[in-house]
Length: 213
Image 1 (cartoon, helix red, strand yellow):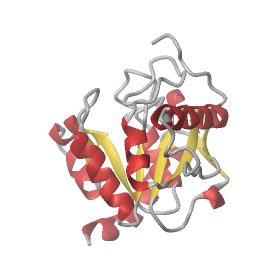
Image 2 (image 1 turned 45 degrees about the horizontal axis):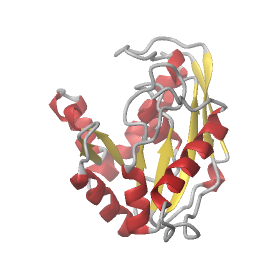
Image 3 (image 1 turned 45 degrees about the vertical axis):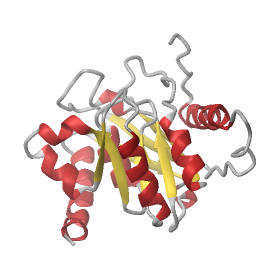
């Protein structure tokens, strides 16, 4: 109940905050591609700590969010995260509980947002996606909505905790939902799912995939 009471306020807050203090114009492309109902996994590139609030503002339906567990230790931010329906995940670990919690929400008909790179990209390129996202898809057989985020690193560059005026356009580009039913039973399904996800997000952002790992 608290979430639904406060969500419109935060929509307004983020919309004003990006446009005026940060001096950015928000451009949202192909919002009509977002399924209005049903279980959905939303994936996006991650170039800035500004990505979650921008995508939260742009997404036309409420969702659960997979976020780093140590956010729960930050005063005030932790409260917003709880109200905002965050699913905590331990970074760079096989956090099965977070994956199962995400899958459960999708099976219940909700949307779940995850940044499959696991952390903010240090160079703007798309980092290799972590394999956990394929487990969610294989368990739920859900559709996946790729999203490309551009220029958020202009207001909050890698390593910076506080945003600054960007004088730029913040672009949110929604892709076509992807169904993986044709490959779910393949021996290399996990690898194919991850590759298709990476390629879809790369196409939306125009950024290369960092293959130096």
